[in-house]
Length: 444
Image 1 (spheres, rainbow, N blue to C red):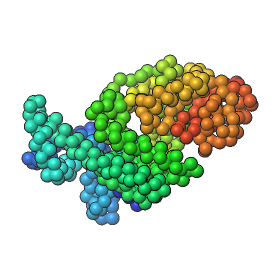
Image 2: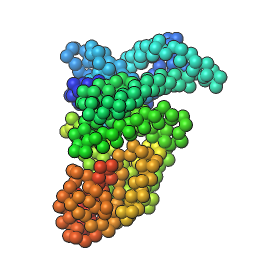
Image 3: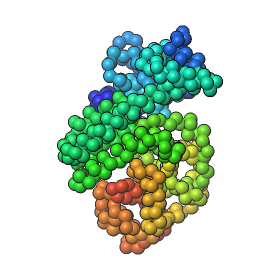
């Protein structure tokens, strides 16, 4: 969510209002009502139907009247009554942070939500009147106008994203011609802001992390690798119509097109006994994310469950490292599906001991298959069986620099083969968990 912020001050300010107590009114509706007073533009865009999912709230400000803020999640498209000229403003960003943390309850939107969305619709209609007309004609031939509104909105966003990624391709080509050392934090920050404006927040987030590659000891190789993957994503987006459907879904997700939680849960679920391999919490300014790695006991399928919360608030405690849970998981679509949601209640299974592992060779084949399906894969859970850990590697896999000298793991091993659950990354393994001789779970 913070990748949508126009600048660093906006990110900081958004975290300051990402508190439920700052919002006297707060809610999310699966569909917002149409405009109270329909207009020609609104009818052309909506076909007389309802808008997509919308988060809304009234935030306490410096004035006597709270700021009315709403965000339509399909865009996302933001509307706020504050005087800020930034888009999105801190209130819209704070509202999105609360929603992503699961702190926004379902509620019926008040009338002002429809009014604000109607004003946004009129603006969008004026900006894309020609496209809307073309899509209306297409919708008429297929027997409906609701599809015309959806196609027009999607087409307008795709046009903005395509223009932003075309600029990105030119920028990358210039970097290669001029030399890797010519770019710095300022250039990447400006480029990331332009990509946010182009509604490609996923790519913007990747660009904003380039400073990490530049700070590495082997930065020329790292930076060139990152540039190549970003360029590959831009080219794949441009040619997405020719890609297999799962890979095209992966490309859209990596660019920043959201997949609604409801859409994921409506898909097929995978029932299994899932071993909880480990978890890793990361703090990004005032937002904490939790990555929980799972592995299916029967299917052998890997899974990643993500949760987010503002600092000071509890994260999802459903999955405890070392436990085995009976659960249905619904996976986000893609060429190498990994991220998942719990599709219902989870229950603890009977203690089952350490999970089944694979040899290092089998693990390497698995990672290779994941990368072949999704070249932008940056993490993957593995369970290595019968490996002896060293100071800088496990089972032939190099360790991530942050995991060098894993004395706790080495002490449990004592020079004998052990089972190790780890997170694979392009820059080395991050050990998560191991099991002692008596079956005790040791969190690393």
